[in-house]
Length: 266
Image (tube, rainbow, N blue to C red; front, side, top):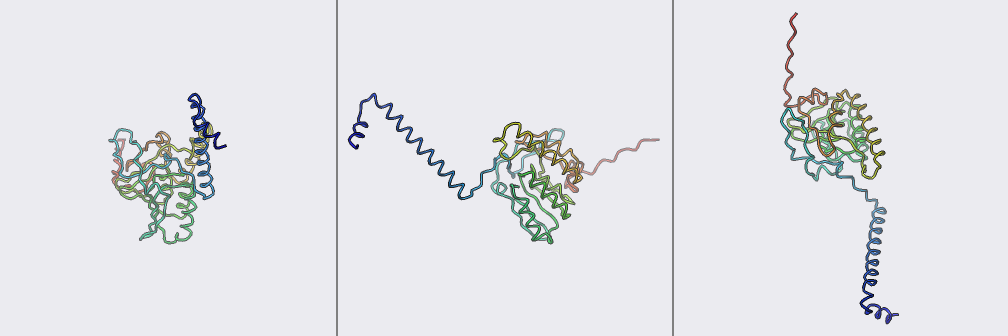
């Protein structure tokens, strides 16, 4: 057997093509087996699949907003490692629960568990998030309203994508100076793996649910109009006055008082 193999390896030049094809097949087979083994290892270990990066835009440094009179959209900022992690909840002084990170599937359950344990101490939920799962954001917002907590985006902080839905749940909703609160179109996690029809159906159902939620929270549906008009790779940033006009915030630092309208003469 060994002599036969040696003769084959040292064969005629016109056999070279066949030998190289055979060797290529061996290499390809080994590579496929290695990939299958890796997939099996991840399945056994329970490693979660990665979420699409487009579902998790990041945050600081905040992008410059266009001048007034122009549409206030900007590309998504560059990734920020802390905000790309799953949302965490930290209770600080004065009843402030700081929620930092991405709203992943299951975040609403984690939040509900935190409130069940420490909700008696919570007065305000402070948000710093690039968004994420819309369904979880809606559930969090409804729990916040049920508990009559306030919500806040601190000065210079970032609350985008589905995060403003959580913000809308606050009985009081405070936006600090230069807080970046932005929205864009919703889309399903893993949408690239869905058919076009399935993806459209999912987005429409999520959109309808979000609109009903905003109406229940007393927020102007113009917020959702801006979201639907903005591509998912951009964000529409609300100016302080807009936050008040659309009732997304009850307090917004930097908002100019409304100009009184002149009364018509009789």
